[in-house]
Amino acid sequence: MLKQLLARKTDFSDADDPSHGPTLRRTLGPWGITALGIGAVIGTGIFVVTGQAAAEHAGPAVLISFVLAAICSGFTALCYAEFATLIPISGSSYSYAYATLGELVAWFIGWNMVLEYGISASAVAASWTGYFTSLLDHAGIHLPQALTEAPLAFTDGRLVVTGHLMNLPAVAIVLALTALCYVGIRESAGLNVLMVALKVGLIVIVVVAGYRYVDPANWHPFIPANESPGKYGWSGIMRGAAMVFFAYIGFEATSTAAQECKNPQRDLPFGTLVSLVICTVLYLAMAAVLTGLIPYTQLGTSEPVVTAIRSYPQLGWLRLVVEIGALIGLSSVILVMIIAQPRIFMIMSRDGLLPPVFNRIHPRHRTPHINTVITGVGIAVLAAVFPLDLLADLTSMGTLIAFVAVCAGVLILRYTAPQLHRGFRVPWAWVICPAGVLSCLALLGFMAWFNWLLMIVWTVLGLAIYFGYGLRHSRLHRAPAPP
Image 1 (cartoon, rainbow, N blue to C red):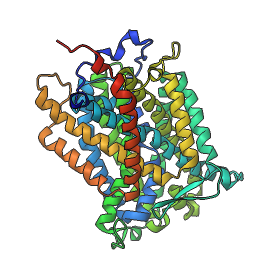
Image 2 (tube, one colour):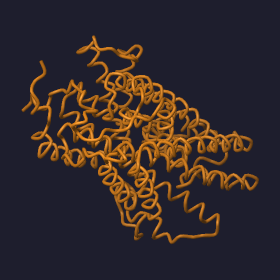
Image 3 (tube, rainbow, N blue to C red):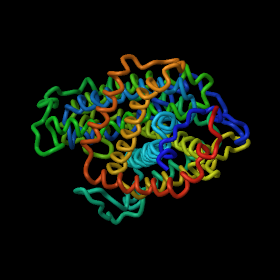
Image 4 (cartoon, rainbow, N blue to C red):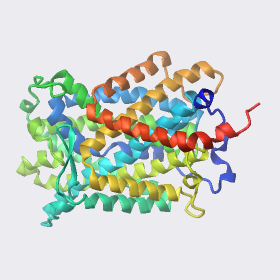
């Protein structure tokens, strides 16, 4: 039994095996991959989480929180870039863990990636509603609160019933983008490139226009005095870093499109690293402007950018730009997550850890259509019912755990398979990889106890599925041993 749990997959040549049915279409180049990364990263983090992290945890020092989260993500991005040249398939950190840490850990990572992609898309959809209703209010249209708020809220460490029906706009945007992803990667990626170009341009406009009205007095004290664990001071900065880490997770989504890259060994490292650098610069610029426009305590709203702009009548014209930019930005994040999650399910199914239905490719659209529908409906249900803050923290936890496995995996393969050709190598790997592991673990240590409880429940459910189905149907155990 232990040997089975620790068995590693070393042959990934079946990724494009036509015996599985139609294969994915290779249409993405380096800038298409970069756009996927930016599309997945620039969204809720810049339009929502920045304000909440400043108001509730770090104050103006949320800039330090972003830098710490970026450093942690940078260590991991280098590791992803090396793995992408070794295992250029759509399984991302699940496949990387399978090759280095064994089947049980791979399942655990893949199961947590459902949190990373599925639940993160739900969190983004929940925040999309805030800017959508703000845009409608701007036009004189007012939706009933019962249809724009989740029926559950996370207050004082517990879930409470709000009396609302559902977050209907979040459901609508998720289902619309799911239909697009059902049709094809070329159409989805093309729309994503357009949305990325628009939202980056709009963010630059907001930063340039808003900077003229920044009051440096709002940056003092830069690190507010600590009031309680995780609220201001250095503990608040670390808690804020754990929270804004949610903003960076999208760069990993680039690796899930490996089988749709024209040249994955070249394009994936390029897209992963370039998208992370661009997004970090944009995050820091927006955080500096927001905390400079109004006191940080006023930014804890569902649309903090609009909240900051409302304080300056001369920036009234900018509100419409922000609302449109936010809707475009958040939509592109949801789109990329809906692209990524079905491909993880597909790879896990090909390994026998999930039922064969998850492995089906549409004969005409060449997309994992059934997985896409399952993912879209699941995301819509979560976005309709649960609040943003709970979904964001769970997403960060699942991602940090996956990142630990990837950073450790690079070192393991350097030792167990040094002869493998690596198109990209992590520099100073014996320093970078342990630093990536330790920084991810440090951020995990600042998560709330309630999130840990939900993570334990999620893990137990995943292990039940693995031991009930995956272990008995694993192709790795049924295949003959390689010569």
